[in-house]
Amino acid sequence: MRCSLRLQLFVRGYSLIELLVAFLITSIILAAIGGFLPNLKRHSKKVVTESHLNANLGSVFNYLSLDFRLAGENLPKHFPAVILSESPELLILRRSLSPYALSLCQTIPQNSIVEALVVADDNSELPGCSVSGNLTAFTSWREYVQTNLSFPFKVFVFNILTKNGFFTSISEFVHENDKLKLRFNNPRMFLQEITDLITTIYLIEELQFYRDNDTLKLLVANKDVEYTLAFNINRVDFKIQHNDTELDEFDTTKDWTQIDSITTTVEASDALFNRIRSEEYTFKFFPRNILSH
Image (cartoon, one colour):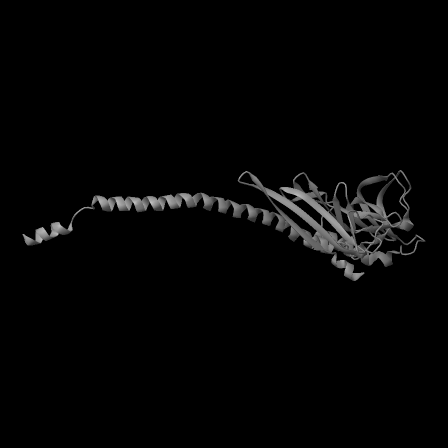
């Protein structure tokens, strides 16, 4: 009987005061959590937005850093390896995919239709047009294209005097006894005369960087392939430091080996709590191949 009474003394419910105290503590905790969650959500979204902006601009930095340094590779001083136009703002970077260039060993009259570019001809009296003298370069080109590119591929026909050129598509390397040829996909008509003495043929990679609305674009001109490098772009600004002068334009008349640096500013934005948050990156590079000239 004593044991049963003692058990009843220990087994009892909570008092009203204890329940009120527990309720008050719980309310305080829930209120604190309720006030903290919006701030946590706000902070989390801010971190995500900043990370997205930084990743967006960081990818631009990583991509351009390599391309800028390769500009001018295997190209001489007189070749326009870097071109910058102000309106529309367009930066063009070029490099040669081969250490060799091939001379044009034929004059192509205006409005004539030809099947191939002759790059060596033992019957020609032009200097540097022997097959034996061009066979190493010709073989090197063929091996590079077969390994790294695909047919048809594009070559750059360059006028040394005007410093202008154009791409044309080649489908085959042809070695015909006393001639070396780069054959077209189809016979091509040339609307202007192409003079042998002032024309050189390069295996060029040409990269064109520009802003299209709110995206930063890259056009690989020798492949006719376009890429989007970044989104939500407000501004892209290219500057070239040349002989201690900052330039908004850099044309084919200027010596690219005298470039001190290429400065690029990219500004991107993203929405955050109905407000626009912006980030700006500025980075400076110089073509590494300047060192070789």
